Length: 337
Image (cartoon, rainbow, N blue to C red; front, side, top):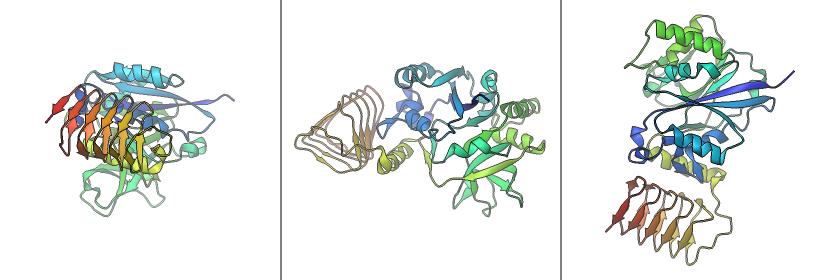
Protein backbone atom coordinates (compact mmCIF):
# COMPACT_ATOMS: atom_id res chain seq x y z
CA UNK A 1 0.00 0.00 0.00
CA UNK A 2 1.48 3.37 -1.05
CA UNK A 3 1.72 6.56 0.94
CA UNK A 4 -1.41 8.61 1.56
CA UNK A 5 -1.15 12.16 0.26
CA UNK A 6 -2.24 14.79 2.78
CA UNK A 7 -3.18 18.13 1.24
CA UNK A 8 -2.57 21.17 3.45
CA UNK A 9 -4.50 24.20 2.18
CA UNK A 10 -3.46 27.62 3.47
CA UNK A 11 -5.46 30.66 2.31
CA UNK A 12 -3.19 33.73 2.24
CA UNK A 13 -4.79 35.99 -0.35
CA UNK A 14 -5.92 38.68 2.11
CA UNK A 15 -4.45 42.16 1.77
CA UNK A 16 -3.21 42.22 5.37
CA UNK A 17 -4.60 45.69 6.05
CA UNK A 18 -4.14 45.26 9.82
CA UNK A 19 -0.39 44.87 9.19
CA UNK A 20 0.09 48.16 7.33
CA UNK A 21 2.56 49.63 6.46
CA UNK A 22 4.46 46.32 6.20
CA UNK A 23 2.01 44.71 3.79
CA UNK A 24 2.29 47.53 1.26
CA UNK A 25 5.54 45.92 0.08
CA UNK A 26 5.27 42.25 1.07
CA UNK A 27 2.54 39.71 1.88
CA UNK A 28 1.77 39.05 5.53
CA UNK A 29 3.29 35.52 5.58
CA UNK A 30 6.72 37.01 4.81
CA UNK A 31 6.86 39.27 7.85
CA UNK A 32 9.76 38.31 10.10
CA UNK A 33 9.72 37.02 13.66
CA UNK A 34 11.94 34.82 15.85
CA UNK A 35 14.58 34.07 13.27
CA UNK A 36 12.26 33.26 10.37
CA UNK A 37 9.14 34.46 8.61
CA UNK A 38 5.56 33.90 9.74
CA UNK A 39 5.38 31.37 6.88
CA UNK A 40 8.45 29.47 8.13
CA UNK A 41 6.85 29.05 11.53
CA UNK A 42 3.51 28.09 9.96
CA UNK A 43 5.21 25.31 7.96
CA UNK A 44 7.17 24.15 11.00
CA UNK A 45 3.97 23.33 12.91
CA UNK A 46 3.27 20.47 10.45
CA UNK A 47 6.48 18.61 11.34
CA UNK A 48 4.47 15.99 13.31
CA UNK A 49 2.33 14.89 10.34
CA UNK A 50 2.50 11.05 10.25
CA UNK A 51 5.51 9.65 8.41
CA UNK A 52 3.21 7.56 6.19
CA UNK A 53 1.62 10.70 4.73
CA UNK A 54 3.16 12.58 1.84
CA UNK A 55 2.41 16.30 2.23
CA UNK A 56 1.39 18.61 -0.59
CA UNK A 57 0.71 22.27 0.16
CA UNK A 58 -1.87 24.38 -1.62
CA UNK A 59 -1.33 28.11 -1.11
CA UNK A 60 -4.29 30.28 -2.09
CA UNK A 61 -2.52 33.54 -2.91
CA UNK A 62 -3.42 37.13 -3.72
CA UNK A 63 -1.77 40.00 -5.62
CA UNK A 64 1.59 39.65 -3.80
CA UNK A 65 1.64 35.87 -4.09
CA UNK A 66 4.61 35.78 -6.46
CA UNK A 67 6.82 36.85 -3.54
CA UNK A 68 5.61 33.79 -1.62
CA UNK A 69 6.42 31.52 -4.57
CA UNK A 70 9.94 32.99 -4.86
CA UNK A 71 10.50 32.65 -1.11
CA UNK A 72 9.40 29.00 -1.10
CA UNK A 73 11.59 28.12 -4.09
CA UNK A 74 14.61 29.69 -2.41
CA UNK A 75 14.06 28.56 1.18
CA UNK A 76 11.89 25.41 0.97
CA UNK A 77 12.74 23.81 -2.39
CA UNK A 78 12.00 20.34 -0.96
CA UNK A 79 8.31 21.11 -0.35
CA UNK A 80 5.70 20.38 -3.01
CA UNK A 81 3.47 23.45 -3.35
CA UNK A 82 0.59 24.31 -5.67
CA UNK A 83 -0.36 27.97 -6.06
CA UNK A 84 -3.92 29.13 -6.72
CA UNK A 85 -4.95 32.75 -7.24
CA UNK A 86 -7.99 34.07 -5.37
CA UNK A 87 -8.70 37.21 -7.39
CA UNK A 88 -11.63 38.40 -5.25
CA UNK A 89 -11.82 38.23 -1.45
CA UNK A 90 -15.00 36.14 -1.17
CA UNK A 91 -14.21 34.21 2.00
CA UNK A 92 -12.60 30.98 3.17
CA UNK A 93 -15.02 28.64 1.38
CA UNK A 94 -14.39 30.45 -1.89
CA UNK A 95 -10.62 30.20 -1.36
CA UNK A 96 -10.86 26.42 -1.04
CA UNK A 97 -13.25 26.22 -3.98
CA UNK A 98 -10.71 28.01 -6.18
CA UNK A 99 -8.23 25.24 -5.23
CA UNK A 100 -10.68 22.40 -5.88
CA UNK A 101 -8.57 20.72 -8.59
CA UNK A 102 -5.90 19.93 -5.98
CA UNK A 103 -8.19 18.99 -3.08
CA UNK A 104 -8.74 15.24 -3.07
CA UNK A 105 -8.62 12.80 -0.17
CA UNK A 106 -7.54 13.86 3.34
CA UNK A 107 -6.74 17.52 3.91
CA UNK A 108 -5.92 20.08 6.58
CA UNK A 109 -6.91 23.71 6.39
CA UNK A 110 -5.04 26.35 8.37
CA UNK A 111 -4.23 30.04 8.14
CA UNK A 112 -0.88 31.63 7.38
CA UNK A 113 -1.16 34.05 10.32
CA UNK A 114 -2.32 31.50 12.90
CA UNK A 115 0.10 29.21 14.74
CA UNK A 116 -0.87 26.35 17.04
CA UNK A 117 1.01 23.69 18.94
CA UNK A 118 -0.44 20.26 18.30
CA UNK A 119 0.69 16.74 17.47
CA UNK A 120 -0.70 15.72 14.07
CA UNK A 121 0.43 12.09 14.38
CA UNK A 122 -3.09 10.95 15.42
CA UNK A 123 -4.32 11.62 11.88
CA UNK A 124 -2.92 8.25 10.79
CA UNK A 125 -5.78 6.46 12.55
CA UNK A 126 -8.44 9.17 12.88
CA UNK A 127 -11.96 7.62 12.79
CA UNK A 128 -13.97 10.87 12.50
CA UNK A 129 -14.82 12.51 9.18
CA UNK A 130 -13.45 15.82 10.43
CA UNK A 131 -11.57 17.40 13.34
CA UNK A 132 -11.72 21.00 14.55
CA UNK A 133 -8.92 22.31 16.75
CA UNK A 134 -10.29 24.30 19.69
CA UNK A 135 -9.08 26.24 22.69
CA UNK A 136 -10.89 27.15 25.87
CA UNK A 137 -11.03 30.92 26.38
CA UNK A 138 -12.59 33.03 29.15
CA UNK A 139 -14.88 35.00 26.80
CA UNK A 140 -15.91 33.25 23.56
CA UNK A 141 -18.22 35.98 22.26
CA UNK A 142 -15.70 37.41 19.73
CA UNK A 143 -15.07 34.00 18.17
CA UNK A 144 -16.76 30.96 16.70
CA UNK A 145 -17.45 27.99 18.98
CA UNK A 146 -18.14 24.29 18.54
CA UNK A 147 -21.37 22.96 20.04
CA UNK A 148 -21.00 19.34 21.21
CA UNK A 149 -23.47 16.53 21.91
CA UNK A 150 -23.23 14.10 24.83
CA UNK A 151 -20.79 11.87 22.92
CA UNK A 152 -18.41 14.77 22.28
CA UNK A 153 -19.26 15.11 18.60
CA UNK A 154 -19.70 18.55 17.04
CA UNK A 155 -23.34 19.27 16.22
CA UNK A 156 -22.77 22.73 14.74
CA UNK A 157 -20.40 25.69 14.66
CA UNK A 158 -21.75 28.98 16.00
CA UNK A 159 -20.27 32.39 15.12
CA UNK A 160 -19.96 34.97 17.93
CA UNK A 161 -22.19 33.19 20.49
CA UNK A 162 -23.99 35.14 23.17
CA UNK A 163 -23.90 32.20 25.59
CA UNK A 164 -20.77 32.30 27.78
CA UNK A 165 -21.12 28.67 28.92
CA UNK A 166 -19.61 27.21 25.75
CA UNK A 167 -16.04 28.48 25.60
CA UNK A 168 -14.58 25.96 23.11
CA UNK A 169 -13.36 28.43 20.50
CA UNK A 170 -12.54 27.15 17.01
CA UNK A 171 -9.03 28.36 16.15
CA UNK A 172 -9.25 28.02 12.35
CA UNK A 173 -7.52 24.66 11.88
CA UNK A 174 -9.53 21.76 10.46
CA UNK A 175 -8.91 18.22 9.23
CA UNK A 176 -11.23 16.61 6.69
CA UNK A 177 -10.94 12.94 5.80
CA UNK A 178 -12.54 13.66 2.41
CA UNK A 179 -11.85 16.96 0.69
CA UNK A 180 -14.51 15.98 -1.85
CA UNK A 181 -17.24 15.98 0.84
CA UNK A 182 -16.15 19.41 2.01
CA UNK A 183 -16.20 20.75 -1.55
CA UNK A 184 -19.70 19.31 -2.06
CA UNK A 185 -20.84 21.21 1.04
CA UNK A 186 -19.17 24.39 -0.24
CA UNK A 187 -21.01 24.01 -3.56
CA UNK A 188 -24.28 23.65 -1.65
CA UNK A 189 -23.40 26.71 0.45
CA UNK A 190 -22.79 28.71 -2.73
CA UNK A 191 -25.96 27.42 -4.37
CA UNK A 192 -27.95 28.58 -1.33
CA UNK A 193 -25.94 31.84 -1.21
CA UNK A 194 -25.18 31.42 2.52
CA UNK A 195 -22.97 34.48 2.99
CA UNK A 196 -22.05 37.09 5.56
CA UNK A 197 -20.84 40.52 4.38
CA UNK A 198 -20.44 39.14 0.84
CA UNK A 199 -18.15 36.33 1.99
CA UNK A 200 -18.62 32.56 2.14
CA UNK A 201 -17.53 31.44 5.61
CA UNK A 202 -16.18 27.93 6.04
CA UNK A 203 -18.20 27.38 9.22
CA UNK A 204 -21.40 27.43 7.13
CA UNK A 205 -20.07 24.74 4.77
CA UNK A 206 -19.05 22.62 7.76
CA UNK A 207 -22.54 22.96 9.22
CA UNK A 208 -23.94 21.64 5.92
CA UNK A 209 -21.58 18.66 6.21
CA UNK A 210 -22.77 18.03 9.77
CA UNK A 211 -26.43 18.25 8.69
CA UNK A 212 -25.64 15.63 6.05
CA UNK A 213 -24.39 13.20 8.68
CA UNK A 214 -20.63 13.83 8.84
CA UNK A 215 -18.94 13.18 12.20
CA UNK A 216 -16.65 15.86 13.57
CA UNK A 217 -14.82 15.93 16.88
CA UNK A 218 -12.66 18.55 18.58
CA UNK A 219 -8.96 18.48 19.41
CA UNK A 220 -8.01 20.76 22.30
CA UNK A 221 -4.85 22.84 22.24
CA UNK A 222 -3.18 25.06 24.82
CA UNK A 223 -1.13 27.31 22.53
CA UNK A 224 -2.82 29.48 19.89
CA UNK A 225 -0.71 32.31 18.46
CA UNK A 226 -1.72 35.14 16.15
CA UNK A 227 0.38 37.06 13.64
CA UNK A 228 -2.32 39.28 12.20
CA UNK A 229 -1.45 42.66 13.79
CA UNK A 230 1.84 44.36 14.80
CA UNK A 231 1.13 43.83 18.51
CA UNK A 232 0.23 40.16 17.90
CA UNK A 233 3.41 39.62 15.87
CA UNK A 234 5.51 41.04 18.72
CA UNK A 235 3.67 38.86 21.24
CA UNK A 236 4.18 35.73 19.10
CA UNK A 237 7.84 36.69 18.61
CA UNK A 238 8.21 36.77 22.40
CA UNK A 239 6.62 33.34 22.80
CA UNK A 240 8.73 31.74 20.07
CA UNK A 241 11.96 33.21 21.43
CA UNK A 242 11.07 31.86 24.88
CA UNK A 243 10.43 28.41 23.41
CA UNK A 244 13.56 27.50 21.52
CA UNK A 245 13.73 29.89 18.57
CA UNK A 246 16.37 32.23 20.02
CA UNK A 247 20.07 31.79 19.34
CA UNK A 248 21.50 33.63 22.33
CA UNK A 249 24.03 30.87 22.95
CA UNK A 250 25.44 30.88 19.41
CA UNK A 251 28.88 32.45 19.02
CA UNK A 252 28.51 35.92 17.63
CA UNK A 253 30.99 38.79 17.51
CA UNK A 254 29.22 41.58 19.34
CA UNK A 255 31.80 44.12 20.51
CA UNK A 256 30.90 46.13 23.62
CA UNK A 257 27.35 44.79 23.51
CA UNK A 258 25.15 43.37 26.24
CA UNK A 259 22.65 40.70 25.19
CA UNK A 260 19.67 40.01 27.45
CA UNK A 261 18.11 36.71 26.32
CA UNK A 262 16.02 35.45 24.71
CA UNK A 263 16.97 37.02 21.39
CA UNK A 264 17.66 35.98 17.81
CA UNK A 265 20.54 37.75 16.07
CA UNK A 266 21.26 36.61 12.51
CA UNK A 267 24.86 35.54 11.96
CA UNK A 268 25.34 38.21 9.26
CA UNK A 269 24.10 41.06 11.48
CA UNK A 270 26.66 43.50 12.92
CA UNK A 271 25.93 44.78 16.42
CA UNK A 272 28.23 47.01 18.46
CA UNK A 273 28.09 49.20 21.55
CA UNK A 274 24.45 48.29 22.19
CA UNK A 275 22.07 46.61 24.60
CA UNK A 276 19.92 43.99 22.84
CA UNK A 277 17.01 42.21 24.49
CA UNK A 278 15.00 40.74 25.85
CA UNK A 279 12.65 39.53 23.05
CA UNK A 280 14.50 40.97 20.06
CA UNK A 281 14.78 39.42 16.60
CA UNK A 282 17.42 40.92 14.27
CA UNK A 283 17.48 39.83 10.63
CA UNK A 284 20.31 39.28 8.15
CA UNK A 285 22.68 42.11 7.13
CA UNK A 286 21.42 44.49 9.82
CA UNK A 287 23.75 47.01 11.45
CA UNK A 288 23.01 48.13 15.00
CA UNK A 289 25.24 50.75 16.70
CA UNK A 290 25.00 52.59 20.03
CA UNK A 291 21.37 51.54 20.53
CA UNK A 292 19.11 50.00 23.15
CA UNK A 293 16.53 47.61 21.68
CA UNK A 294 13.99 45.46 23.48
CA UNK A 295 10.80 43.62 22.55
CA UNK A 296 11.25 44.46 18.86
CA UNK A 297 11.74 42.93 15.42
CA UNK A 298 14.32 44.40 13.04
CA UNK A 299 14.06 43.00 9.51
CA UNK A 300 16.72 42.38 6.88
CA UNK A 301 19.23 45.05 5.89
CA UNK A 302 18.11 47.68 8.39
CA UNK A 303 20.58 50.15 9.95
CA UNK A 304 19.92 51.50 13.45
CA UNK A 305 22.20 54.00 15.17
CA UNK A 306 21.85 55.93 18.45
CA UNK A 307 18.30 54.71 19.01
CA UNK A 308 16.17 53.53 21.89
CA UNK A 309 13.61 51.11 20.46
CA UNK A 310 10.93 49.25 22.38
CA UNK A 311 7.79 47.40 21.20
CA UNK A 312 8.77 48.19 17.60
CA UNK A 313 8.39 46.38 14.29
CA UNK A 314 10.88 47.68 11.72
CA UNK A 315 10.74 46.53 8.08
CA UNK A 316 13.50 45.72 5.60
CA UNK A 317 16.21 48.19 4.51
CA UNK A 318 15.16 50.92 6.94
CA UNK A 319 17.65 53.59 8.09
CA UNK A 320 17.10 54.93 11.61
CA UNK A 321 19.02 57.47 13.62
CA UNK A 322 17.71 59.33 16.66
CA UNK A 323 15.84 58.42 19.84
CA UNK A 324 12.17 57.42 19.39
CA UNK A 325 10.82 54.76 21.74
CA UNK A 326 8.22 52.95 19.63
CA UNK A 327 7.96 52.60 15.86
CA UNK A 328 6.01 50.62 13.31
CA UNK A 329 7.81 51.21 10.01
CA UNK A 330 7.50 49.41 6.68
CA UNK A 331 10.25 48.54 4.22
CA UNK A 332 12.69 51.10 2.73
CA UNK A 333 12.00 53.88 5.27
CA UNK A 334 14.32 56.67 6.43
CA UNK A 335 13.82 58.27 9.86
CA UNK A 336 16.18 60.69 11.62
CA UNK A 337 15.76 63.06 14.52
